[in-house]
Length: 171
Image 1: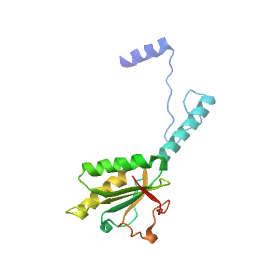
Image 2: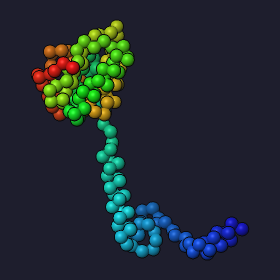
Image 3: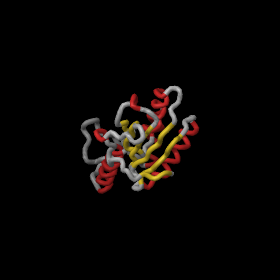
Image 4: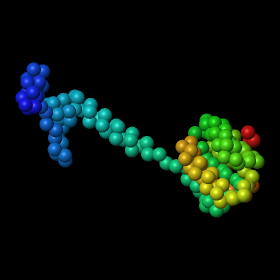
């Protein structure tokens, strides 16, 4: 009964049943209309562009440059887009205040590529370091961050892509 109904429907609307290419045996007729033309070329280019953009959109987390055990209150970070420096710093400030951290110092470099927060150590610095690491790692605007003590930079572990500058301004 169903086959009869399908046949009547196809005949009435003039539809033909097109078969898909077998997996691994695709031909140049991408839309399976029976001919190779500009539409197939367009579809091929579009699929290639979409696949390329999907590959490029893989999100990287910001990397912790040194060890979590080096946390002593200071966190320095590098920003991908310096024009977002103030916004990123303000977001971090709001998050840390919401989580109960006390900010002692907050700065952003003049060029906007690096920022720095210095927090009062809580009762459990290890737990604080884990919470800070988790938050900073998920910030897509950041390329890297590290724990450091104010005025005690470790030149062997510079932040990529730019080294921290001495010219920092208070916000």
